[in-house]
Length: 303
Ligand SMILES: C[S@@+](CC[C@H](N)C(=O)[O-])C[C@H]1O[C@@H](n2cnc3c(N)ncnc32)[C@H](O)[C@@H]1O
Image 1 (cartoon, rainbow, N blue to C red):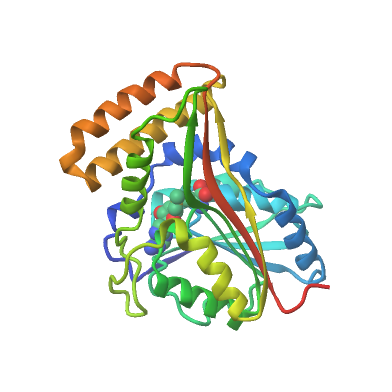
Image 2: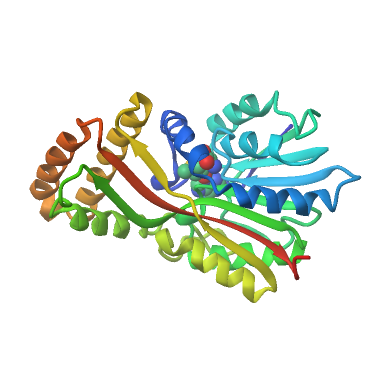
C-alpha cells in the first residue's frame, strides 16, 4: 500500500538517482557486502521470531537491499520501504513482489513515499531491524544523530551497508596516475556538499558526511549502548567482465563530473586525467577498488 506523500519538497539534485545506475552497481554491491553481518542480523531476528518481524529499508531506491536481505533472514517478514522518488519506489515494489524469506514464505512489502529529512524519534517504534544501503554518506551530522536516537528509542537492530569510505584505486599495473589523488580529493569534497539533509523542521542544514558517515554512525550508536560491528565491503571491479567494465566507465565519468563541478578552474586538468584513465580501463587486467563500510549494531550486550 502506498501512503500519501509526507513533507515532499523538491529533493536536492544530488539525492536523485537514476534507475540505470542503481541496476549497474547492483552486482558489485551484492559481491561486496560483508556476509558475516547478515549472520548477526539473522541471529537477532531469530531470537524475536514467533511473530511477524517488522523491517524498514530507508532510501530503498529500486529495492536492492530488501531483495538481497529477505531470503537470508528468518520470517515472517514485513518490510516498509521508504524513499522520496516515486518511480524508484514503484520499481522496488516490483523487484520485491516475489521475494520470500529464508523459509520460502512470501514477504510483505509496504512502500512509503516520503523524505527522510523530517525523521522523528518514534519513526522506528515497533520495528525489529532498520536497514539502508548506499544512503548515509548523503546525510548530515544532525540527521545521523536523530537516526541513532530513533534506533535507540525503538530498541531495534541496525544494518547500514555500502557507505563509501573515500578511498579508491585504479590498478593497471603501473604507478598511480599523478592526478588520481587530486580527482579523489575533489570528488570527496563534492560528496560532502550540503544535500538537503535537514534539521527536524525539514530545513537544509549541514554538509553531507560523505566518507565520514559510517565511523560516525558507529560512534553514535556505541554512545547509545549498541554493540557495533564495522566491516570493510569494497567494490572490486575487473575490466575483464563486460558488466563491470560498464560500471567502471560510469564511475570514471561520475568522478570527472563531480571533480569538475568542485574545481571548475581545473576542468582541463580533470579532462586530461579522465582521458588517461579511460585508456587504463581498456586493459582486461585493470581493476578498480572502491572502499565501503558495512555496519551492524544491536542494543545491549550480544550473547
Ligand atoms: C544511492 S541510492 C541507493 C538505493 C538503494 N538503497 C540501493 O542500494 O540500490 C540512494 C537512495 O536514497 C534515496 N534518498 C536520498 N535522499 C533521500 C531523502 N532525503 N529522502 C528519501 N529518500 C532519499 C534516493 O532516492 C535513492 O533511492
